[in-house]
Length: 372
Image (cartoon, rainbow, N blue to C red; front, top):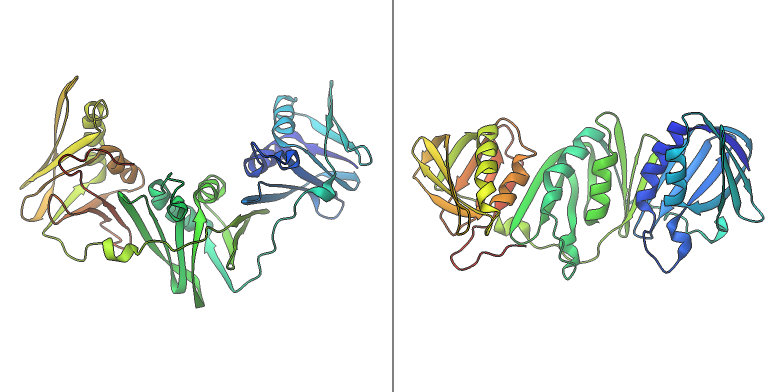
């Protein structure tokens, strides 16, 4: 096995693949990535930890074909430190040993038998969907921060993806907040499918997806795959029933506040400087043409902010976790709606220009100041 490759191309691909390789596992081979040289297609890199798998094709000058498994992190670290010249890669496929040469640098790396490396699952196709990459990245970013980290409830550690007819929905919740978004499908889907995508997968997709181009999505009962820009991400799905999110989204409101996102975000950031020193609670109170934001710490002091608003309905006050509010403000733009029913009802945030996006925060109740 022998090929030459640009350092930049190889390092960028290793950066993608290494995130799918196991960081700790009883099977040492899963800490490695599979590297294949193919004269017609180039270099194929593939990594998996059995939950998520990523593969990538990159161009190279192939002199001799072959495949080998090498420790992913070590290979990435070596390539990172090499000079920006062509890298020559040679492997002894009988001893599973590779040589990496670049200018005056020469490394030997011990590897594994590629026949023992697991293949990525073949996602048979009850449903196939195409979506603009930028749109998929946007809806993932709009909900991913609401994923739970509580491993005792696995279904909450992922995003629910509902594909049906002309719409795709994504939902994430940790019981204290919920994010929901809905977008049009590029192609009509005859069969409805509900799947739960692990949080690690959607966060990796958020990092990898480009703003341009198209993503091909294939889904079956056990796996989902995303194919774009010569990269394929395959992930196992989470088994179980996602909570009935529709029943917790309020269908009425008593008040609607229209506010500029930037004004609200800046004010909450400042108030949270005090809030996070205690319970991270901010108190919101509408007063006709302004929203008052206050926080207090028994050790530090207090903060008072005022933001101009338009109010439809009666005045309200509510106490919420400041970080939960800042998370959603990081992904919204322009003017937004804040819908309120009462101090003990969910606090709902919507985009002004598109009410297909809904984010709700459960209020902090007296005597209950611990959210996840």
